[in-house]
Amino acid sequence: MRPEDSAGAAEPGEPVLLLTDDAPPGASEAPAAAETAGAPGRGRCWLCPSSPCGSRAEREAKKKAPCPGLGLLYTLLSAFLFSLTSLFVKKVQDVHAVEISAFRCVFQMLIVIPCLIYRKTGFIGPKGQRIFLILRGVLGSTAMILIYYAFQTMPLADATVITFSSPVFTSIFAWIFLKEKYSPWDAFFTLCSITGVILIVRPPFLFGSSSSGMEEGYSVHLKGTFAAIGHAVFAGMTLVILRKMGKSVDYFLSIWYYVIIGLVGSTIALFILGEWSLPYCGLDRLYLILIGGLGLSAQVFLTKGLQIEKAGPVAVMRTMDVVFAFIFQIIIFNDVPSWWTVGGAICLVASSIGAAIHRWYDSSK
Picture 1 (cartoon, rainbow, N blue to C red):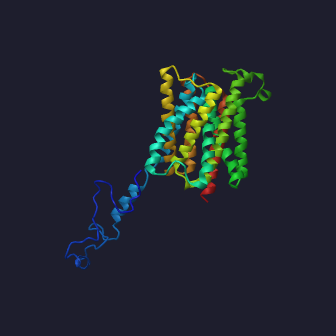
Picture 2: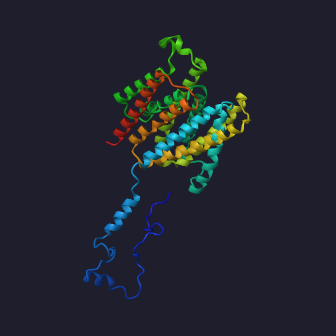
Picture 3: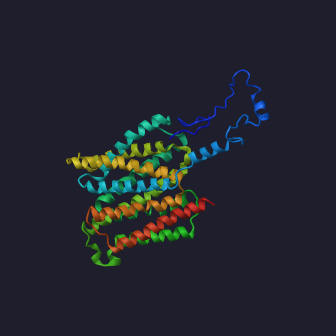
């Protein structure tokens, strides 16, 4: 990213008028003579009599204005990359979810460390924010492990849809810890999310024993559901912590804590579980590399989309992640979602969009 041009420097190749204080000898009478002759003086150009130059100001405004729809395009790309990451996690069945998380942390660490050195932010962070950075790392890495486990143990579309209940939990935790307003609309969106999860899980005591006839067994499906809900809860808490820190902490420093704590925690968990093993298949190794690269790229595109586009449209475009997940599940895994899953997806996506737009609307007042 190019820094703001406070010194008046221009892009390479841009024609400019050199207006400096270092004038050659004999030029002190030039401004008066120019004004007498009707020519533009200091701070004016020869094409436009206004000061500052209207044509130049217009060009600079156009240059700084982002391309219309660019933020939504970035968000669409992030949704597609997030879906691809989920697909590859689902494809890697012989590697434990905790080990996948460890590999992703290693990959991201190799990218984040040079960025921190370049930005000269250090690796510890401000003294008053370190406890929040640690919490961000613990909660974020736990959420990553849980969603990877959910992707491996339940249908791709089901796990993806449940993650969209995260904004509802964000509203609840922001109300509890940040004393933000929790309106009746927020309660309605929470109810919609609960309804959507029930439609996806289809508990036997509500839908009968036929709901347990799932391809991988209902108990495994239920474990994946709890993992996906846990991811949504921890992700919501992570967002509240990030909002608590605000702009006082560099974005890459936040990722650094997330990566280093995730790597240490995943390594300890792997030795406790006895699940550490290098993938034998070369394709699985390729999937692990792609998970790390695509996951990081998706985060970058989503961040850039939020920087230049309003939160409401971004929240709507983010739901394309669900569309891609349904497409991959049908085409790649030949698994057509039931109408119960579609109904649950509609409820969860609608509540996610509604909560995000409502929060954006309140903050814009």
